[in-house]
Image 1 (spheres, helix red, strand yellow):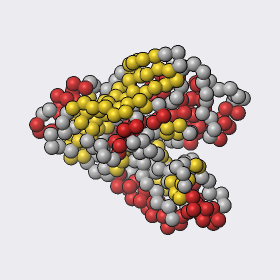
Image 2 (image 1 turned 30 degrees about the horizontal axis):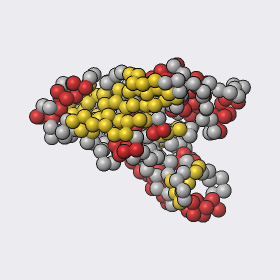
Image 3 (image 1 turned 135 degrees about the vertical axis):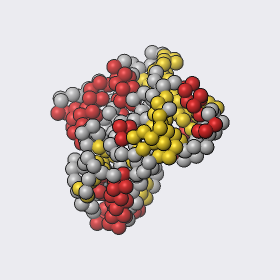
Image 4 (image 1 turned 60 degrees about the vertical axis):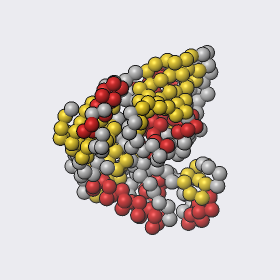
Length: 337
């Protein structure tokens, strides 16, 4: 157990914040032994994985657990699919590369998404037409107030667009320990309907892509658009793409002819938040030590010496401006502390 630890190395924004208590967790017994201690029972608890989806605006006056649980286990395998249990502290992209290397498909479109496996079901991470809910079998977690281990199947996880029960009813109440994934083997049907993937494959003159070639295309796209947190602090996409009623979209389309949309739940369409932010004039705009990235308006960055409250202030200024100009309210995808 360490006290008064800087969290700057443990968040991809590279923001300074302190933890009153800090412990790195390498196995499940360590979690149980630690949380059985009476002094931590009523203390605020924060579980950190890759630190890629958090914005610290102040010190954390409680216990921070750094999740380093590791392991990928094959539970069942047939000629057409494989069932895996993956520890929540595994780096997500490393798991994707492991699957690609072994010829298991289903998550190649989710290459290079930052964070850990444990964060995947919480956010229902998704990219280029694929969401992780499509391959999750169940989630195993520790209930923090009872210290009992329980599981939820995919249906009970209440997955939605960047949503799950872990962001609502179970938020702050559980520690995800592992996730089961059912991936495909054998015949590969690539999900390449998104234009960016098609263009990248066409540039490489690939017409019948392999799992690895789809993964490499996604990696190339993300690297061309998104800044490396090791060079420029950021948390990836800061805002969720909003869903609005079709009627509202049709009215906006009359005024903004190039406004794009994607189908979603019946009666609604999804609008790219990056388009809204760019057309409101924020793309590439710097405000002090923070700003919207020049290549991807969705990404807020730390130019080196930003404070968390500055990034938060910028985010809510953008939210207010988009609301005023388009009548659409953006929601942060990042957890703000």
